[in-house]
Length: 472
Image (spheres, one colour):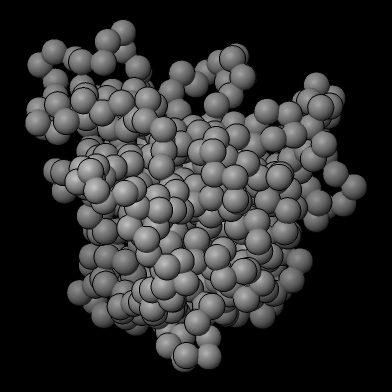
């Protein structure tokens, strides 16, 4: 730990002017005399590894990004295709520090660890609407391409991941639409959670929250993974009522000191995150989507039309306001999140492991139980459907909401949450729902009751009670 912290203390990322790959390539060509056409050809050859499932020589313009989205580069010039390939084949080492909205602009602050090369040669050798402060005039720079790909991945609802997105000359997918409005429609705080990026708020905007709630949650996930403890059970003395403390270091308590360091220094947080394992809670895609649902529902519960009108008046400088966090906005997010869970179940490089099946089932049951629990007016509105979350997703029509996805998972995984699903069934009976939806839920419950007894006992022990507790 001390060696790692020592190395971090010697880094000064803010003072390092970032160097882009295209700048490095230009310098290399100037000093070594390489033919640019030869470099372009080399880039095409290197891109073969990015094509993945599209090995056909007639489709050299299809590339896969670090987020595993697929892009079609047909609309770009050869030079810009090469730039995008460079970004995706060797992603920049970027850490997002923070993000915020300033009037009609979304601002993302990031740092990049740049590797430089020094060559000492013998005397006789010769020698738009989207902007970035890197100084690279030819947009899109690698920082923009990287960030827009990350943003696109967060809420690409209803997209078939096997189909390529169309890359525009500005560095983002055509399907994204206007990037600013895309972020606004989703809400910046929802995007930021998935990017491990704190949102800067106006002073006094949230007087009851001294700390970034999501950063506290993810710090707990990181620390608990070291001890192989469930995050919810790890150090309740620290995380039940977290406090920043007057000093970062807490004497005689290494765990609390590291927690405060994770909150205090985003470089240290991202360094810690980079060392986590794929199976750790912070990297569990189903857990992250479940947390998104919790964020969306928290925003819905906090929404009031009066406050929204007041806020929009005070931010008149913004040309594109974020839509209200009302029932229709929340419903779009929940339906989209269930689609992402379904995609994460299907589109995988390897079959689901046992813990992944349980995590997927837990996330789906969380969504279903949360919706059923909200058969009440969330806010004033012209119709019952515009006011009630439950009616949007279950009560007014059979959309197979969540039940269809639960049926994709093996019974032994879903049966861990049998008691919660039975309680959901009873609530739906009281609220009312289409007969076809109720019948599908009953069929699912009957299948779970006859599942393997051994795995049922697992659910009845750790999984069921813990899952039921979180549904409330």
